[in-house]
Image (tube, rainbow, N blue to C red; front, side, top):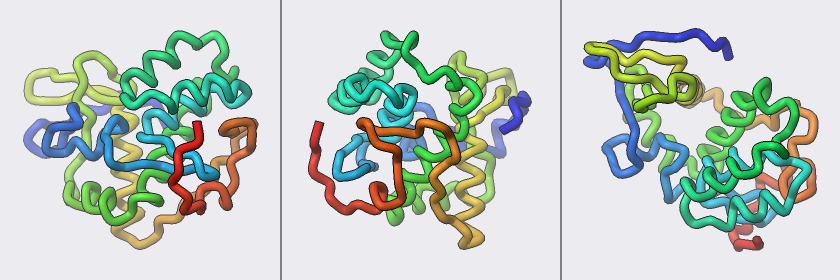
Length: 195
């Protein structure tokens, strides 16, 4: 994804910020969209995203997914940043794309409705300060890279065109709890929680 700053006119976009708001299901923090990898429950796509930052530290990953709150999971991950994968900055957008694709893949009916309800409008994560994942209020516009909004729009278009399929990104050390993530692990229907 190109890290270009974009401008979105307020009257012609869908925004989300709080999980309790009208479009809250679009947020990575949104509850009710569990993900399972190899029989292990991850409560939100945000928790998975944070866990995948530490592929060679399954103990940190376990701790991240134990939190019932995605904000707490994120805060805990931030206390361990020195152990992040060395290529995090160059792969974080691919990892986020995988996390939201997995959210859709395992919650197809509910999450596809949330995406398709946005129609053709630009999707913007409205934020107070994060101009990378979202966009900030600047008068009549929202301005920012809006990386998450752009990934969601891309996913929505794939859904509309009936060409959605989940792919495991080709990234070195894409591991969860000590194992490389495989198609079989994400196809698991076992939703029991094994911390």
